[in-house]
Each structure stands twice: as C-alpha cells, then as structure tokens.
Length: 428
Ligand code: 7TS
Image (cartoon, rainbow, N blue to C red):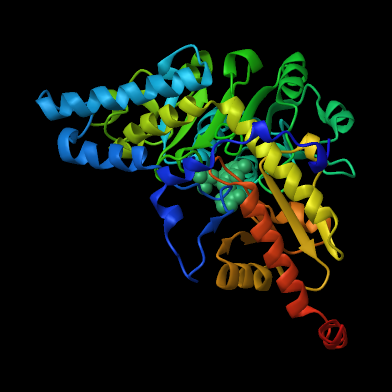
C-alpha cells in the first residue's frame, strides 16, 4: 500500500477536533495549532477536563480512608476507574491494575520490587536497543544492585527487532524480557505475542512498555499473556500524573511492596508491618485520585470511537506522511516501512539540526513537533545521529496537518539551503 491507494474511509471525522479546546487556540503565531507531538503527551477533550472539575466540585475527598459521604463517593469513582482500566486491558481482575504516577514509575516498581526480590548474580534481563530510557535505566540500576546482566536485542537494517537474534539471546539465564510494544522513536510495532510465547517457553517473564500502544490500538493482556504492562494516562487523553501497572495476580501477590507508607499496610507495629492485599500493597500514600478518576472519561471517549478505528486513522496519516517525507532530498526517515509501524514518523536532515528545524516549524507554521533524542539516546547513537525530528499523530489529526508539516519542511529547506542555490531559485 502507498498513499495513492489510501482508503479515505479510514479517517475519523474532522469534527473530533472541536472536542479539544486547546486545538482551537492560536498558540503562538496566529496560525491554527497543528499538534504533532502526541507521542510525548496528547491533549484532552472537554469530557476529560469536565470530569476533572466535576470531581473537585462535587465528589472530592481522600480515598479509602473516611466513612463520610465524600470519601465514599471519591473511593467509588476511583475504583470504578480501576475497573474501566481492567476492561480496557481485558485483565482478569481489577486488583491486577495498580495506579502509579506513570509508565516510568510502573517500570521502576517492577524493577525494584520484582527485580530486587528475584534477580541473582548472572541472571539476565533482556531488553532492546530501541527502548525509551524508562525501560533501560531502571534495569541498569537493578542490574548493578543485584549482579544481574543486561542484554539488548539488536535491530534489523530497517529498524525492526531482530527476532533471530532474540531467539539466540534468550537462554535459561534470561529472567525477564522488557520490551516496548511500539517504539516512541521508530514507530515500529514489535511482535509482542511472539516474543512473549518464546520467552515463556524458556521460563522468562515479559514486561511490556505499552506507553505508545495502549492509547493507539486494542490491548488484550490475557490473550497476549504478558506478565507486566505499563502505560501512562497523559498519552491517551487522560490527565498527567497517573499511569498504570498491570501485573498478573500471582506475580504481584508474591512481590514485596515497593514504597512504604500509608494505605499499603494491613497492620503496623513499631518495628514491623504486614502489607495490605492487592492493589493497595502497591499504592502507598495518597494516590493520584483525580487523575485516576478522570481516566474513566478518557477511556469512555476512546471506546466511543473505538481503538481499532483510531489505529486505522493513524495508519492512514502515518502512510501519508511516510510517503511524502520519502520524496524529500536530504531527509532520512528513521525506522521501518509503514506496514511495520504506526502513529509517528521521525526523520533527520543532513544539514539542518533537528532543534532549528522544530523551532521554525513552531514559530512560522504553528506546527508542534518534538526534536531531540526522544529519551532514546542509545538508539540515536546506534543510528549515528544525536537528534531527530518527530511528528506523532492522534485521533484529532487530519491529512491537512500532514500538508502543513510538509509546507513547513519545504520552507525550512529553502531557508537553510546554501546561498547559491537560494539565489538561483529566486531568479528561476
Ligand atoms: N516508554 C515509552 C515507550 C514512552 O514513549 C515514554 C514517554 C515513556 C516510557 C515514559 O512515559 P512517562 O509517562 O512515564 O513519562 N515518551 C515520551 C516521548 O516520546 N517524548 O516525551 C515523552
């Protein structure tokens, strides 16, 4: 498939944009905002913004503490949100859903709690060279602490995981495979089911960094049989400050608490404590009450459109952008062909630094993209570049946003073209 054969019926209605107040702001330039930085964080629809203010106006108190009406109400809403997340993931039990501050916190929880209790010197943790720092650094830290060894699945030439090498790296020393379902820099969709089946065959557990997939396509933890799955609310129309760790009941049950404090205990004595049952065991202190509750509204919004439909829409935009960017001289697209990726396109230029590039796109075209290493420094080093520019899509983007990006790119190229070429162009 290429953009000439794209099926317009895959596109979601343009009117969705009206649900997102921030998208009708003239942020800087007098241009309408073209928001293409969704892999970093998405925007929120009115439904989510209203859910936040509703809680504060009508239902707010601390959860799981009081017997007064407001505490009962906020507790009920908080637990309803947990159930909604369970259903979104098709998890077996609501108590397998732990509210955390985000993907990073979720992965750190597993590294510290599960890793601290289970890793021995010489054990191996297998991750990949395309991981976000959040799925690398916590494993480096726990490896240093336990004597475990970190290994990395390499990439194929076109930016996919090298599954043959994965099979070779997977041994009976491998205790955990920690892998992103979708790369936040390459857009590569990784074969999680295949990886999980192989890992389980050798007795290893699987943690999926699903920060870039739960918001964009259907997830089924029971079907894919993953052991842990981490993602963030702010990348899926929800508030910042809340994320989720899914873990299988038997694993979470056997893990020691991560943070100690209020709420995570059954009983405390002066010199010891007994931990609470799931999920409270992993929710020490006052949790992100309102962000968690507002996740219900975000999930309702996504479900009303349908994650399959969202995925098709983003595939369309990705294909469109990929094809157009492929035709630009001096521009290199990072990562695989559109059929192996979704939601985003990162690229680099021979002669223009990503930061300068993003600045002009923002200042003169109202196009918000991310420039930098996107928290994947090892991947950028491997690709021989220090930074790239990334356009990442969500349900409110439209083909016109891609056109505007291309207009901006053409203008930047002219602006940064060598003087001789520019003069020649003008006299043509
Ligand atoms: N994992 C992946 C794959 C991510 O894309 C991100 C955030 C994280 C983990 C961390 O999520 P957090 O919510 O805990 O911060 N990715 C990006 C990005 O690509 N640009 O800014 C943040």
